[in-house]
Length: 282
Image 1 (cartoon, rainbow, N blue to C red):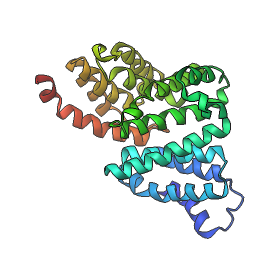
Image 2 (image 1 turned 180 degrees about the horizontal axis):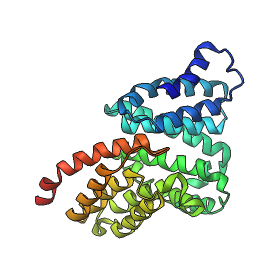
Image 3 (image 1 turned 60 degrees about the horizontal axis):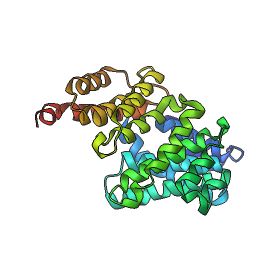
């Protein structure tokens, strides 16, 4: 909590903090949360900062960095800390709204009626070749993917998955190491969640997982968890499944920018490993 106090005190006291940019406050909060080891502290602290970003955006409605920070924080909270379905849908909708507002400000071509057609959407994406687009595209894709996951019962949501994959591929093309290769993790899940007979591409997914692990030098533990959960279970490879999860549990979770994610990954790994025998004997 100590690393979160300065921006909070700025808001409460308004003394000596008037000149700190809103986007700096938002990014500082995001960094503090990503590096928090105690999951309960992060979960209980995030709602205050959601309200902070909402308030900052009232005064700065077109500040793209704030919109992206809001999208990331709302998405993180909805997917990791909220279990009530109605609340999850409400929060992830706010996340996607912020991400889309940022995209429409920076790259309005992606928001035109023509861009609803898949081929036009892809054509516009191919023109985005500046690395400055990375944060925008990555946040848009990952927030959209989380929105689809939470709304997966809706066919219209699943129909957009190919567009999400296209945006993630654009991120990989610009810089596959961005955010320690996390775009590869999302692409791994997208490709390996179904068997080939149902349109899945598990071996393509496997390659993405392996690349994510290599890019992070094994430090991104969620990559190994999703590799086990998505690919190893799909192809019924218990040896790979259990090895990956044991590696996660043996690792030091404290990594700059990944600590909270890694702690949660270890919690997931314990649960998956405890189910291993039952799952693979069925």
